[in-house]
Image (cartoon, rainbow, N blue to C red):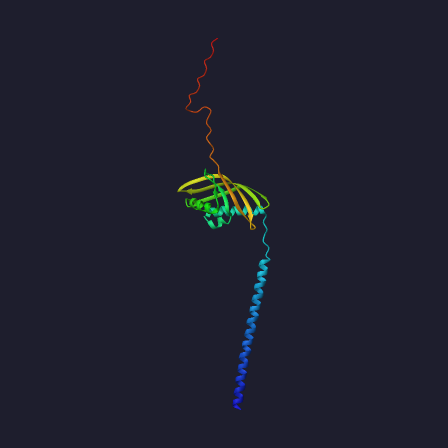
Length: 203
């Protein structure tokens, strides 16, 4: 009788353990399923989140701001995102055009290493778009310390842009530096003796 009782108890214990395992597995499966369901719901919600659309002109304006910001910070990677690999850059100095991003990047890094405390302001921007091409022109004011000396300059830049892989990039950059106004030569310089007055005529 004791053996039957012990066997019954062992059987009940085993059944209880199995029941507990089954309940735990059920809860775990339910929790995993709910987690997966929530994940899919979150992904669907994020993919359906509306993105504020920007016009081509606004995209180009934003790209120019990104380019100027990266130029000031010395962020070559971010700067490259705004330039095409086959870009042509014409600087404000008497120098041949720089062809290709790789060539421009080297010159930019050499120039940027000499400059500290940069301030670049953009004003009077005008943007025109025609299909996958466009251009923008703007004035700029530049201030910085170059080779340890303060420097300020003004100029104008015109960029030609192209939409590639649904993204606007600069394919041509032409920058001109405004020259300081030349002093006006007075009509009668100070070192030129004045013309003596004419003698009165005798009557």
